[in-house]
Length: 130
Image (cartoon, rainbow, N blue to C red; front, side, top):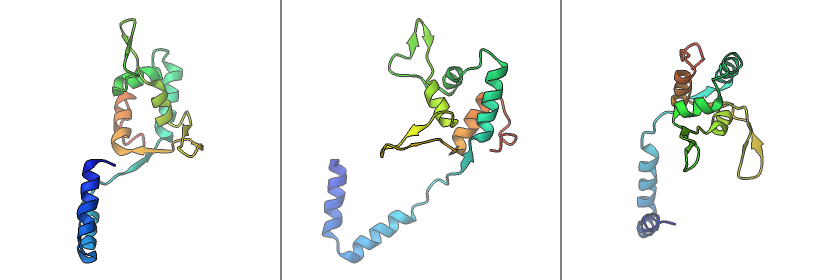
């Protein structure tokens, strides 16, 4: 636990139950940025079509275009290395392991990330279902 978390808990402990409830309600009322989940299937389909058509279009190139560099040494032989595994997982082509040991395939991604994928795939977000 961080020092800040410990001091917040200590401060909350000193409050009455009514005061604690008031603090919790204020935290819950904070406006959050709305998240919109977008299905990855149309993006995955376009990615697979494009990789089949163009030999130079790879998951690694998509990762580089998204700025997803692999590891601390993101250059090998003077060339940038993109995190292709991350791209494949985001598009639902590889399973992601969960903390409890299960594996799942991604079916949705956030709106902002979907728009970035559209940019890299040269797609209009509307046509991709975003």
